[in-house]
Image 1 (cartoon, rainbow, N blue to C red):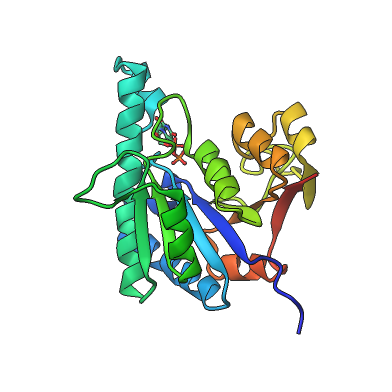
Image 2 (cartoon, rainbow, N blue to C red):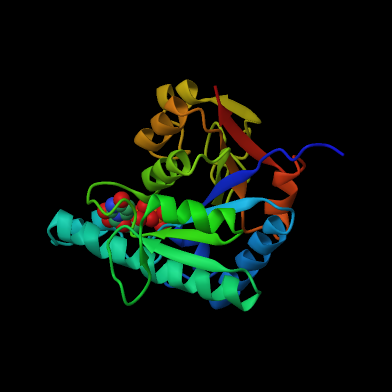
Length: 238
Ligand code: UDP
């Protein structure tokens, strides 16, 4: 039997993924579909933790552009990620996957606070841990949170689920001849300013030798396929 490619991964979902075909908010059917994919992945023995974004509800930068104080707007964005985390927890528990939400901003009556060693114990027991409220600090993003938590939790890879099947040399929605990379180096991503994750997230993954796997989570069955090394993706590594 071939050894599994990964033992533990962090799955990053942007808020946009959770709004499904809608323009705003949380689409329950999309949460259910993603939950089914995560369940399938955990059934292979893979340990999964997740970071969810909040862009489907509120983004700090957009709030600041409308006149909110940037730090306050960022806290609002972080609170949005908690709503998404609870929605995903609900969807996962509906299909029988034990899940814990840990928030970087403590809110004891809603979820656990982020405690790394406790998260570690949950994962050892096969629970999916969803990290909410980003880093808990304004001026950061959930991409950076994903890289940070992936490093803290000793993940073998960071899986970034998006609505495109990898990283292209131009926007595939605008340029018909755009070509997808199979693999890319961290340095190339940074030097060419390729839109994978923000620069601090990429640098954090590079410094901690965590490959970033960019794949399309909107396509049913794709997470399992990419985990088996079969689906289409771009892998960012050294
Ligand atoms: N945010 C923050 N600090 C963090 C993570 C997130 O201030 O550590 C805020 C920020 O305002 C951001 C919002 O939360 O715009 C939602 O996160 P993000 O934009 O990363 O979500 P995504 O694009 O993945 O949906």
